[in-house]
Structures are given as structure tokens and as C-alpha cells.
Image (cartoon, rainbow, N blue to C red; front, side, top):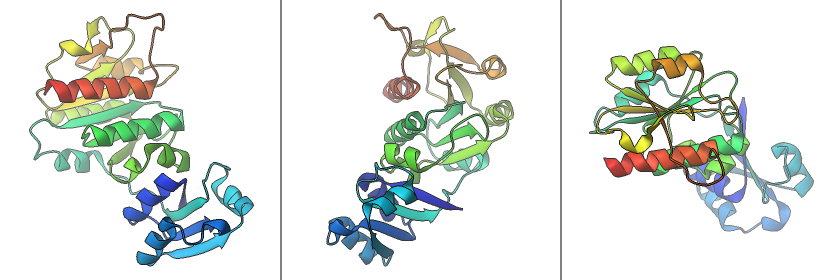
Length: 237
């Protein structure tokens, strides 16, 4: 199945990562630097009308560029763990039910920025990798390893067997995320925007933490909360 990526930055990142077969470009953008980049990579470039781009991307928010390529290559938990063995302090992110593609895209961007070794997420009840996620991630989707599993509890057990400590971020916590010693292999669990983390996943976590908040709003957007905690983990190390 083909993967559709749209928007200038997302398309540029996909071309750079060699994840594009055909580039569709609005006719008035002939001569654009992105077109030159695609031609240097020997990609097929087709000039079409704006309404054709909207039809292919299924959105008008394409900025004149739509790239068609193969599905994103998924990793396994074993791949992620193995690739992190050389690091002093491995860091994995587990996503439990992220439904908003904008949140997933932003989380991928933060994961890339803070050196996360890989993301593990469910194959059902959660948004999967798609064009909107790719656009919001501004190319991070091409570089962060993602494993899709049917059971997060089993995934957590595998990580524990490999020496990982599981830290879940949940509003029910009494402990601050700032109070944890992250100088060890860590898997951070982040829950859905509306329902949080599943009870069984929480039960299997070694620590349940929250972000101390002092304003009138009781919670943060899932992607913002993820970025805050990842920054705290990296800083503490």
C-alpha cells in the first residue's frame, strides 16, 4: 500500500530519506528547489493542478507538494532494544491509545529531538502512521523507529526482561516525574488524550508519575506532556 505525504517540509524530509517514488507538484511550482532536489534523486516528478493534489492528499493543506512512496518500515521491539544497547541509558516511548494524528506527529518530533530509541504503540484503538502524522512530525517519522504491537502488557514484559524500568505518566499519580532516577534503561508510557493509560498497563508500571501543575488547567495535551517529561529525563541524565 502506498504512503501519501504532503506539505513542503514533510515532502522534503521524505525525499531526503529516500522514501518517495513519485512527487506530484502544482504546475506553478515548476522550477522550485524541491523539484530540483527530487530530480537529482532521480524521482518521477509529475506536474498537476491543485485540485488533483487535493484529491491525492485528501486535504487542501498540501502546499503544492504531494509525495507517494512505500509504507513506513516498522521495527520490532527486539530491533529497538538491540539498537539501543550501545547507549549508556536507553530510552523507549510507549503510547497507549493516542488518537489524534497531530499529537502523534508532534510526539514523533519530540522523540527524534530527545534521542528516543524507539516508539511502541498499539495496532488498534490508536492512530497509525499516515500523511497527517508525517506532516506534523516535519520528517521525524522517517528517523524514529516504531514498533506496532497487539498487546502493550506483553511488550512491557519484554522490556522488563531486557532491564528496562517502566515509568507511566498519569494524572492519578502522587509522585512527580522530577523525583525519579532516570540513569538506567527507561520506557516512558503516555496515555490517550481522553482516557489516559489502561489500568493493566498502569499495574505493570514500576513508577506512576505526573507533571506538577500550578495553573487553572488540570492537564496538558498528550504531545506537550510527552515533550516535557522527555526533556526532564534527558536533562537529569
